[in-house]
Amino acid sequence: SLERFIHGEIYKARPDVTSVVHSHSPSVIPFGLVNVPMQAMFHNAAFVAEGVPVFDIKEKFGTTDLLVSDGAKGVELARVLGAKGVALMRAHGSVACGPTLQTAVFRAVYTEVNARIQHWTLALGRGAPIAALDKEEGRLADHINQTAGMRAWDLWRTQVRAQVGW
Image (cartoon, rainbow, N blue to C red; front, side):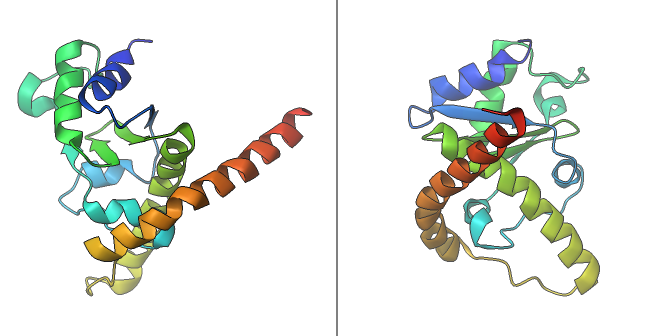
């Protein structure tokens, strides 16, 4: 895959990560385009409370095709991600990672759901403060989400198997 450097460089930089999900989630992309930080809107997206950095490929590499198509770009994406569970990629998408495949998928799915909820909250609140999860609430809820991620995985796997007749 052309963008294998996303995964490879994150794995090199993060020995705690065994799975990386790269997505072009439509509700998430706008948060990489404007100066509105993604906030944790609910408990299933508690990992967002630790912060969601934005990787802007243009800052270090100038005008590109926006693809992480070599090791240097992958290294920079991994640096911006740091120890976080999710990072946005300006005008491209996002990466979610975790210690298991199930956690990475859970984070990718709930990053999208969280983004939709934040869009609705911003529209509904019309500039009012948002009572998002703070870092400590996020830390406590994310600890519980490790088991929730497995339950969600089991549900999603069952649904997919039923759709394909397995």
